[in-house]
Length: 147
Image (cartoon, rainbow, N blue to C red; front, side, top):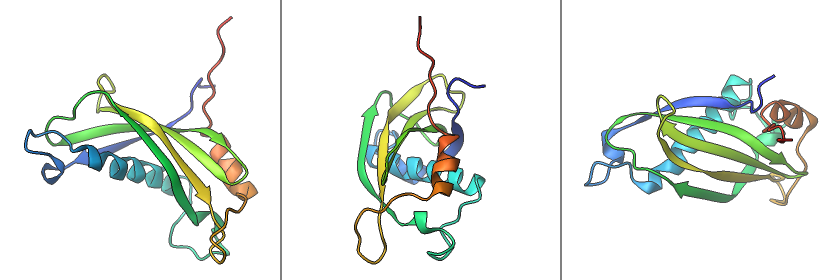
């Protein structure tokens, strides 16, 4: 068993995302993180194209996004994004992430992205389905304590 099961996505960094110093602009990180999470959903059979009866968990909003920038991404290329689930609440899910160089040796940013499932009619928080919980439990961070 892995001590920290996670999903890794390689996200292309394009020239038009760079600032005048040829660094990835800080406002572009959320898009790369979102793409990694969507790729994980796709890899697990979820689709944003299904109707509400087929995938009621697709209706969620971002409640919080916290990013700590560690090192600049210089120039176009590929950025590695590792994601995992920190915790699942009744109506919320907190994803952890680490953005790094393609080889994983240089960390660029880390943080958390919290989403809340909402009822599409009332726009109020709603509980996740058992299917959502089951799939996401496989992505839960599992770090063993040191004795």
